[in-house]
Length: 327
Ligand SMILES: NC(=O)c1ccc[n+]([C@@H]2O[C@H](COP(=O)([O-])OP(=O)(O)OC[C@H]3O[C@@H](n4cnc5c(N)ncnc54)[C@H](OP(=O)(O)O)[C@@H]3O)[C@@H](O)[C@H]2O)c1
Image (cartoon, rainbow, N blue to C red; front, side):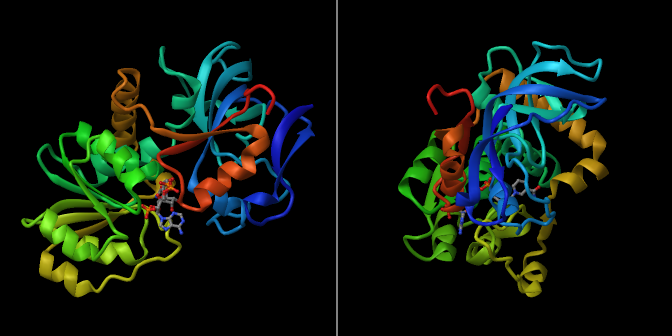
């Protein structure tokens, strides 16, 4: 048997209970991983609530990314003892996970399980968005909404690495402080006043690129901050509201509204995916793209970890340390 967080009925994060259940069976082409750390993503909350774009039948073990050690390999590419990190739709919040060998990557030497577990979704999303979708260039003005969240803080960090000047927009001093720590040079608290005005004052010549993982009421003022020909990338709707943008703004600004969705991008841009992932792994290995871990929980506290993310409290990434003693 293994300890695992289990969702038997859809609902809020508190619907999750930690139980002893049989470990998943190893199947050909997969590896069995002893999970060291799992990391929480916003869609985990949506999947538990059955509000995600794909419905996962109950019961299931939530958790979409992890780092750990291979204990059994049904695929020649890996062997027992290999340290790996990976992503999956569900199944990471458990002592053991069975995943397709194609979904795991070796952890670069010197990178710990927490950083490796927190890397797979937010950093890859942010890097594909910046490098391939928006094609951010050195010296460009980049505005990041939700800049204290998982995707947002990764976009701040990676935008800085790509040479952009980053304006971070977030709801609290703590989130903005984290963004400053990862390279943002202009900080805007959208709860302190009018975002459109604040962006106009911060960027009188306009922004080149906006990255938006939040949507809702923030999207339109951010789009209005673009200069002529700028790019707006819609990545997610953590606010719970899908914005409707008046098309005359697009006409007047000659701007481009672009979208990023992980599975679609992976399927349609394999060459860019390969290039981006190689560059990103180098950045992780060199310590230039280590995720910001804002909070850590034990497996017994998996529901609290998802609650932290559901309430928009997370700064950077939230991890679940499956091996934490006594939890
Ligand atoms: N397109 C893709 O392939 C892809 C990939 C990964 C993630 N996503 C999506 O991107 C979005 C952000 O993901 P994430 O991992 O960065 O999430 P996160 O860490 O929870 O951050 C989301 C941010 O959204 C803001 N927010 C505003 N209203 C909120 C609310 N009611 N509840 C929670 N947050 C709220 C918060 O920023 P402030 O407090 O500063 O306002 C929060 O920091 C999610 O919708 C996720 O599904 C999409």
